[in-house]
Length: 328
Image (cartoon, rainbow, N blue to C red):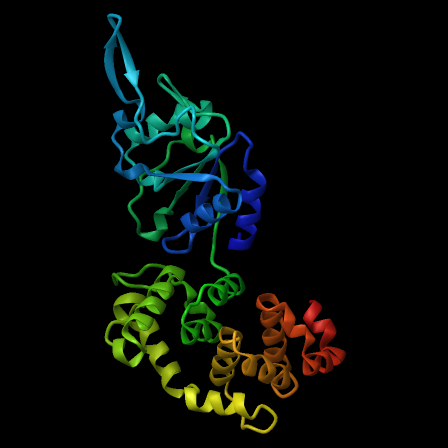
């Protein structure tokens, strides 16, 4: 399922008994979605890396009280006075079988040894698949059968909407619109390969270095050589800032790009810069000059991020002809 659907499913499951297990390749946002769902609900997240636990960590250590051995549960588990939250067992199938066995009772019965998971806490787990070249152990059928299994995959539309709201570098967002297949590739023998997380890292690096040219030699080490080569070619032939500003200054008459790469860069930059009034006005005018498929995307994304865009006169003119496409 795509990220927006997983968000909805997890939000709906909050508060019920049965735990969920999120499957998916590395770097596609499994843990980020769990944290986002909990945050929206005002719930705390305790993030446990199951692969780092020993079998005795969950049960705790014994202490002699009144001549009896009493197991003292670990402090990292939710306590009785804790507010409702999510106990997130990440990388659970990267844990050795003995650690997985120690999780059986906690996952199903909400207790382990003398520890009881407080009311209001929900268990969510996540892990990579064996084909992802990640460290994994075969998960016991006894443990697997205790979960509602949800498989997450990338979705370009979801990622683009997220990127525009989270200040991802416009050229990176535009490139994924142009080459959606490079949002994720299956891991290769190379240490670096493209994933949603890798493109976010690239965005941060570009902003840190002050531009793409200044960090061009680092790009292959983030998204892999193949994706880096295609990204470099895209940047080289795309619009530059001088051309974009000329279009914003003269939206009625400026020459518009005809190539798909240029159109992706222009529309992405316009949405990314919609905090500028001149960009908002220019965008509404450009709706009636751009190819319909790009104009519709521009209109939808502008409305999603800035509802006041619908008050632009040029937008109203555009809607008379393309209202059905906007609604679809």
